Image (cartoon, rainbow, N blue to C red; front, side, top):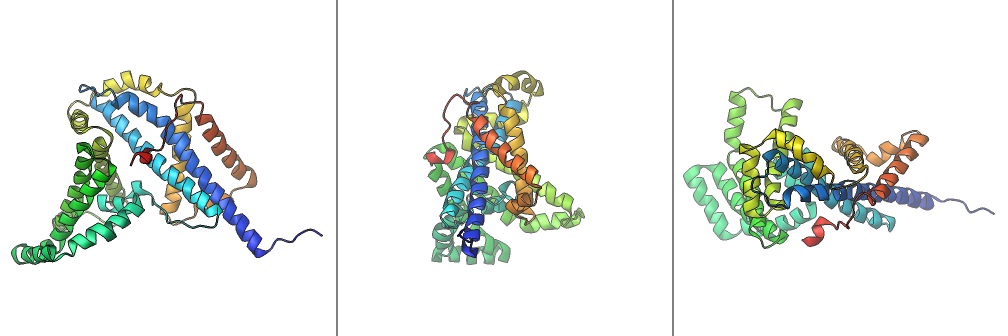
Length: 333
């Protein structure tokens, strides 16, 4: 007599399919994006050339932005997928961070577990100490309620991001990167009333889709300025950032980019482009509150399995496009 599938068996099978989908998606991020962009980034930045054209530095930082997200979130997706196979639901660690509308919003979406730990065990314990409360009252009496409320939080944010920077490594460039993020967030909070008045005076439709897109692009630029110091030693990061604004030299991009792209062989950049488009589509669905797995399940059978096999093929093909093993970036932290 053939065994009958119970509701429990069906649920487990659905859980297994969802877990495998998540693991495969994470593997695509890690191997078909992060590992294939790493050699080109290194070829551009690791020479520590003070005369590196700003256009090449910007190209490398944009690729690093892609690599870092794909590497870290891809690894997390793989871990979450394996956990789901055993019925363990872990909290997500990323929530479409490159759709953030402010730097504060970005850090609520990027490495969520670290942010939650810092908030609960460093930010609030420090911001609520008696000296900080007295400081807030002093600021209120001198500069008004807004500064009295925001200044203690601004100081606490600077402390948190200094610690986050040092957590990444005891080098000056990590501390500078952390303080940069803390300072930008602190200034944004302190100047919020002025920004609101400016928006009103300029009649900016702050609820419009165009303004929303502008804020996303603005935040992406702010985040990428920080990546100059996250990826490079402090002095080199300053030089690359300066060159980006003072010596962009677009002709150098046409002359030198092909050589940098050649750091990986075969159809590597085709894999990167296709995988990035899939990640973007996945992120758009998530940002809209839709379930990417459920959306894929609604596709016709042939198209759905064609997509699965495409991702598997790209992951396998990525291994022959690099000549060296590329570890996980965050294994160093």
